[in-house]
Image (cartoon, rainbow, N blue to C red; front, side):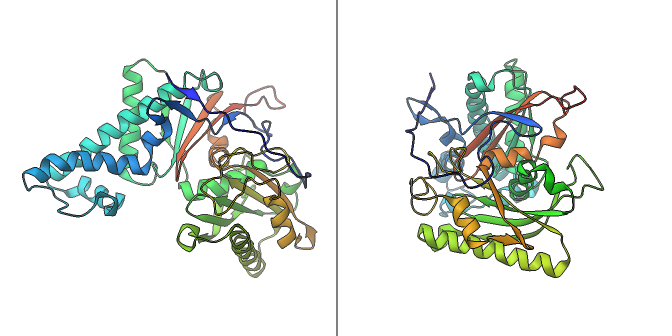
Length: 364
């Protein structure tokens, strides 16, 4: 039986601005996120990791290698990219294609197993739809695994839809920040800054609201992007914050050049359990340095580096990165009440939402 992991509480610094990690947002309730389930073999999320995918590839290569028919020769599985696997699916020989399909089938079985356990949890009960983002969504191999897992769940009479995330996962992690934005932003500004911090990369972007095209924010889109692969540089925590601030400043200058009316607001998606004052309780172990320290407060660091945007004081709101990626789907979830998101990056992120009743008395 799976069990939940409980983390210790950390002391938190004084609040800066806004409510970070909020459970009540304008259009949804965040019922839960960062759920970690374990069984006797470890964390269930590890069974749908990138490492797990390549372990399955190793498994199915072995019988072919014994006969001298391994299509990848002596290459380690970790050096075989998903684009290459996609190409084999598209035009590979029957043995190569069969190998990749076997990997997809096993991976889908693991994904379905994880989801069955999630759906047994109190915060995930009665979930009607689960959006799959992160690395699973980026390639055909992942999309087929999602489709196959959906069929496996339906065969077990599990009434939940699985769908790939609508936007590119890299953009979704930025677009979701518009749902964290205070309502006053929408009068007089056409874009915001967003930051998506992951265990391998940091992405920053300018997100256009496009409210004239779609008042429900369904047309919000990333128009400018910056990326930094911090896993290669191995910075200290302070060096990472300086680099992140540099990405944002570059985007501010670009917004000025290109005529964007940028709001004095930065939305941040960050791994871990985000407290209401912007401290990180747990789950940030893949970031450079100790981000869970009681002496570290990322929103304060960002405001110190960027105190003003267009002569207005900067406001920062931070939430869990899986929550933010899921929030990019809010405009498209009006036909269900309870829905969730599963993202695969360095770890397995997750969040569950319930749509809130709007002033017209209907769920949005």
